[in-house]
Image (tube, rainbow, N blue to C red):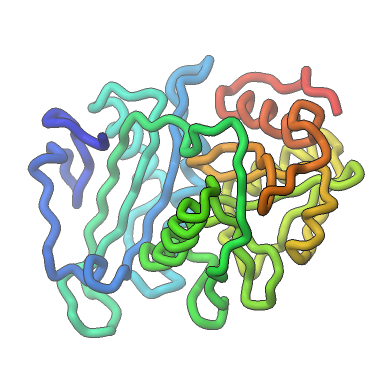
Length: 295
């Protein structure tokens, strides 16, 4: 699914076949989840292949490593150029890109002395195949920000996300909506959350959530189109009176939420503020004007 015999990846300064790549079985990342990664998309735009917000993603990768004391010396521009080379070598335009920073062998609970950097890319459609999602409120909370660096995109944090998604699917839902340690809405296992009520969009503030790059793009769209937006804390019960809602993330892009715990939203997606955001986002990643979008 992710590579063939001909797939080329970048690993520690070299471009090699994915099938020939090796990782040490005693890596601290494999044993303890101590590593960092990013999820990035490239699109075939009207101006050629474009890696969407590459600099922002690689700046976040740098921050993630710094926050958890993983040594990382690569520069943003260098990583961006390597990414375009990976795409070119694999003849990819519309692709998902996975940079991964993983650590050297270390069975102690101390900072690694050496790291490896991999950048891979593959043809991967939308993360959710559904047109809209049925959510449940997860019994798994997002980590307490005093226990981990929640703003860092760290490998081990995603055990929490996997458990939440598995639980949702076992209950017959498409995905989970996760709360923080105070019982307030945080985000999805791999996406940020917005909801609409009476002509205003709301989203949880930073602090207990991952600062999503797509989230930031959605907020920019709202500002550009003069769409009212507020960051605030709210409980899941408030969502049962909301008009509409959506998830957003690099893999998910912008996707409608149909219902929460079986209760549908009052407004059809075709009439929602979320649809306007969804259409504008598509235009941005494809380098098209979204001036036709009128609020």
